[in-house]
Length: 396
Image (cartoon, rainbow, N blue to C red):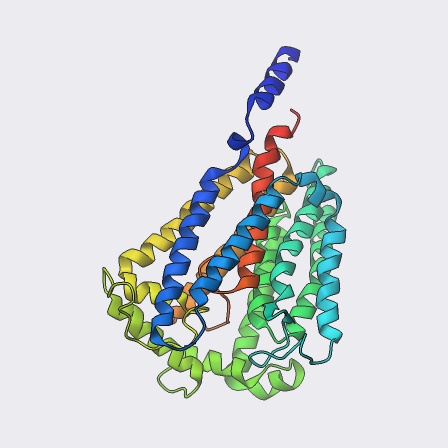
């Protein structure tokens, strides 16, 4: 046994710095970056904007990769040791935004006050709060299960209660920003983490059932009693328009119905091979952000769209493999939570472009234009790179 331990230590010492970097993950991210810039540049050909968002996206990616590589060399135990400071810091920023009056630093953009405007650049704190939220949930689950040797109803209720309590403040702050899409992402992360937390299915099924029931009631209210939702939940009219345009875009006069019908026409016209890069003819407002998949579908067709989905699938398989091979449960839970966030946004974003789901304003991870969402996702990838890099430092 002692000989085996010495042998394992020798193997770790013989692994070079370059071998400890997850080059496979870097290849996947580089491929997504290339597709993103190409698609955004194609979206600019329509002349909607005077700004070249493709060039800006390149800058965002360069800064994102720099942040990711910096985080790679920070030990995982740092994130674990200071998890409450990190999570508390993100809540503090959300609180400052919540109490701040409208100003040049905290302006109202697209009808909502969700950003800090600094030096001509908009930063959305809720994007980074999603990552810190996953860290905090992973810490709670790993610490709870560390000292639990058998399942009990009392222990499961305690864990579930701690996870729900942790979710109250971030969900409240994001919901107060009138950001229903990001709020749903937080709920999706919570449900995904509950599924892998070890909580008994006798508690999971009622929790999922209650969530589904609440969602059904809200949808019923949107259709039949929108006045109640406006009065008691402060739901904005444009959010109702998104639901109506999803259910019957042919009868709705909202701008979102125009986006959905245009998206369907664009993707449908792409056929199998697509029209070709820069050859898109269907006009879609803000196609470089929420509707970037429409550009891919129209110009690269079914084959290009399938390639993007396969790329996300291969990335998922790679991250799941890491989650199952690392010895630290905190790291595994973070990866699973991060994947839950990514895949929910992928499913929601692609779903809304083909009228499978209503428009929520969620971006397509790594592909849509935007600094905050991309940087937050790259920070998450940086933590995963750190997990991969430092797994060789974990003592057997």
